[in-house]
Length: 398
Image 1: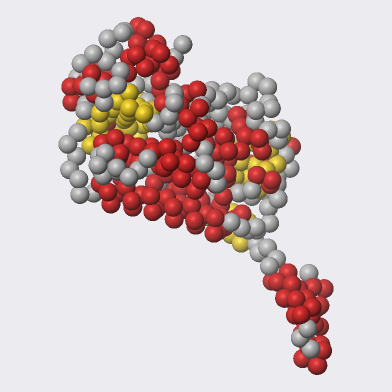
Image 2 (image 1 turned 180 degrees about the vertical axis):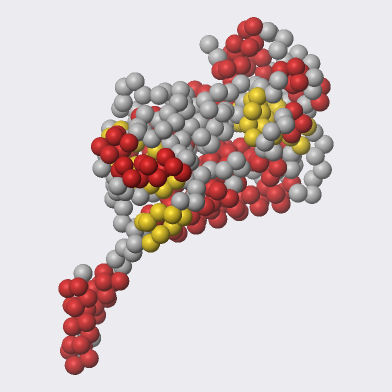
């Protein structure tokens, strides 16, 4: 590097002494000066769990991502060619890998599964993997670890063990609309030298949120809507709902889950409590990931939804999987448009939901993936209105 600086200074001196500003000499000066000033700089940053970590932005060439959702966030900003390994759950070449989400659309996986195939294992992954596998990570010889395990002490211990920076991320309760997601993307952009890419995606999310809010803010909710089937730790069925569900809040939708649950977040409502409010539910937004798990309930009780106004009136709307190895952030955004359009069709008359899904996945992943998402077994044909829920479940689930 010192030689490069010396070369640049010598060239400048030669020019000032009458050497002339020929195109070649000017180019050499520019290139040498650029190389001299673009060397990576060591800096300290705070990761998303408040840990102070020393990093060298833009210098990393062997990266692993661990924990639910870490690879998803990396895929929005990072370069697949820099991955030194992936978790088994994301590697189709691994036998005996966790496969509980294989039938559920995960856009980041759809877009990149071939790039992940055959990479070394940095851990098993999946809802049951609640700790980093240090030895496997070491075997990948990374120079950076990106983690969604949010335990500070364990992150510090892992960093000590592997001897490279370990940066922890956060999604936040609000998913695609949460400030923690913006913070995670911003941090990744800085550390990976992809600031503009991160800023562009953050800008798109903000513009989409503002668009939905603008369309619905002056509308008065007249229908109670039940969001159900949201996955949590790999578990989902019609009893899983959410209180203070951010997509509904953004779209100004009256969420009956706010009345059914007491705690914030995704949780199961008691069956008796849900049934007692059946007559109040005007519409249901049903997550596709739950369909296969509703079938056993129907087999046990064919009259499971008897008395539910939304089911009897054919007002059930199928959204794509909100959670599959943490939140499908692209689908969370397109789901918000779908729910808003289902409740306020006139306000979203210009939105064709499949085209919007293509737009969203292209913004997040650089690819239009609606067709791929729709063909996944547990997407059941994509966004749609279900006129007969019982028949739909019985026909779609063997």
